[in-house]
Length: 286
Image 1 (cartoon, rainbow, N blue to C red):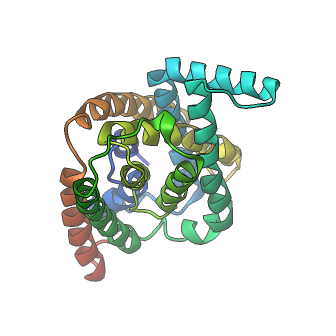
Image 2 (cartoon, rainbow, N blue to C red; image 1 turned 60 degrees about the vertical axis):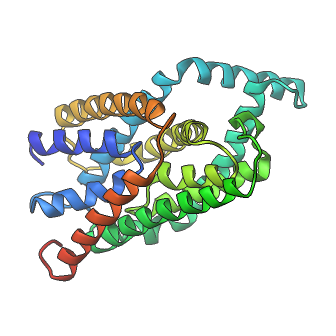
């Protein structure tokens, strides 16, 4: 992998991890579209490099939400020492994030091997990217119908029930499939749980933080296996670039979802997914 390729992938990962367009899908499709024959998307060096990019993204999310994460961590420790729950809003949010993280961890362990086999092929990534767009369209349509039948107010993320938090966590687990967006599916699930777009996005980004960080830390040993051959300079600059792109992305999206919805991203995923799927079926990309 050249330095330019590493930088492109780093910026791409940092942006697409938080935009609801699937970072994993783009990490597979872009090298295929650009015919980067020297990049083995299923090989240990590429996967090790992606680990560093995810670590940069996770650190950017922690930095952006640093005040809230400090409050949540403090509240969780206090409640654990106390041995019971209270009405503290940071504590309520913290335990709901813990509950929502459980399905991702379990399903990630169970399905890691079969899902990883999809990483080297652009066909499945394009198909799931197309599905990702349709899911966002369906979510927005059903959301409008749901709100039309109810005059109730939106919930805050601290008011989510534990079953609702668990459902959002299960939805986020579908992002194990290349082409399915972590933020996209968890936001759609949040909308169904009566959050508005702004709160659904915030819960999605907070939920993504421990998941991305834990996945990166668990994969860290792969950086040091002999066959990984990770270039230190490219990996370091790539991680920094991914983190910077992720920080700017979450800053933009938290403002965007105050008055906008998922449909523009749905159009992007449907169009790009359909084009890439057609190219993959014709053997133009592989």
